[in-house]
Image (tube, rainbow, N blue to C red; front, side, top):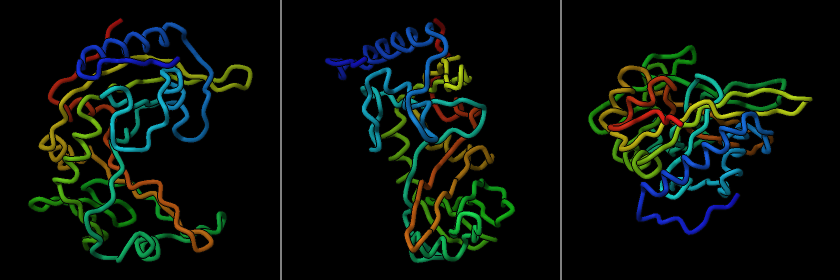
Length: 240
């Protein structure tokens, strides 16, 4: 289904069309998952809506960002490169210094998720004035200017539809269905910082080096699913 000629100057019009299409999809119950990989559920929903895969920082659907989730785990907000490397020179140096050799996959991996509380790898977040610091055993290694985080948050999430899904398998075919949708508007950088302080926002490193080549999936800023509404000034559960 391809949706064209939406009046992007009228945000309520975009919202109406999106919710109408999601209602149609919800009423269909379980549908076949038509994509592959970690983002296959979201891509399946986007394909139904006629959305071209989105790797830039603009919202997905005529000013509305779409986020799908199949379990009550961490929800990715955005990926953002550090403002500065402090305890290392670049991403490759970061993996060399803090990665772990994976004999089974023959690579050096750096996969770690953490908040303000130090995790078992020694990683943690801290806030100092106008920056968020990524630390390892108390030593700063990366720096994020809060103004840059604010830019990403407002650009990508000014208005977001969070779509909760259930998954199943039917005759060997993976399927999903829409359970509910939450529509959230006006994210607040002050609320984001508060969630960081409370340990509800997590930072995720997701990279490895194999055969001399670096693969970086992130880094990601993520929030616990049950705390998403706390990030926004306005939010509502959609009732059909």
